[in-house]
Length: 179
Image 1 (cartoon, rainbow, N blue to C red):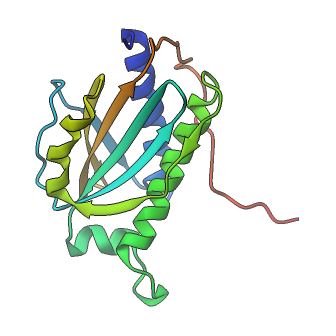
Image 2 (image 1 turned 180 degrees about the vertical axis):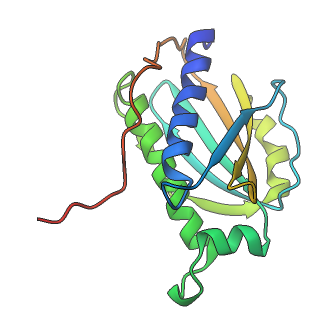
């Protein structure tokens, strides 16, 4: 129900959005590796951030598996900000999801996004209940220190086929310009 080129397109759109939005500084390094297989695997992280992009013909869950450790929390949170890791990383995830929503909007009408929500990592086991059409999982490492995983869970309600221009430049997002 989802073509091979659409699967590659979804993975490319995710990778481009993650590279642009998961790092805090432009000098940070990010490695993203797509894991083999099409089954949902349990990752070592203990929390997940779930976001959804949906249209009339599909629902795409973007799930970030994150550790509850000081390395990850200190990378994303500033101690003096008064904001929790869940709040800060929820916004980061929302930026990534928003970039995917914009890209997918080139191929589908009437797109929408959910509010990010943090859950216990054990909830990943219930993704099979959605009967996904396509699953891909990715290992992400930032600055050789912060590690996480991401799961894309694509549920198609109609045949899906589109081709993404993989030569397109990375678009900067989430920045304010003051005049």
